[in-house]
Image: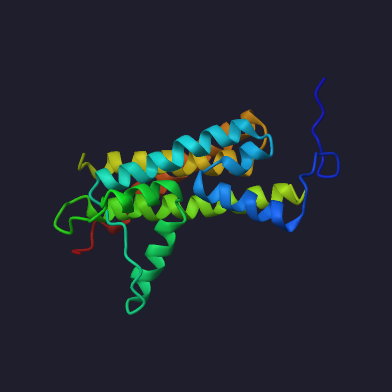
Length: 136
Length: 57
């Protein structure tokens, strides 16, 4: 018979600040890495497959990886959301991908996939952080 | 791939998948939450689509 573990019973990661920073950095760079670190492999596998796939679909739909333009607040926010995707964002920047084709019918859909991929990864990072602190 | 509905399905699938896995711990609950969210996405899109139909936007 399996029993559902409570917050108090669950193994708690070292809540030292250095470890938490490393955990969050790894969770940012590789989606799901934080959960893998915490031993939640099923969740980690889903995140590492789904989030980069969303980012890739966004690129294939001719979406734009936004630049950091402080003069355009919404573009700046979209750039931060893109950045949160981690390694997929770095690869796209290095390969000069994600120029965006404004005239493409799928341009806005592509942006939507790219931005939401980063924002979901941010939620995943926060979840890994909470798990490390024993809150979940 | 320019079908709006297909893109909606793909987007809803990924978002539901991530939220289902993120919010629940048991696989059965994850599936249930994800499926409900996916259905909610589709139903909302169809209802809003029909509600907007009379408006000449």
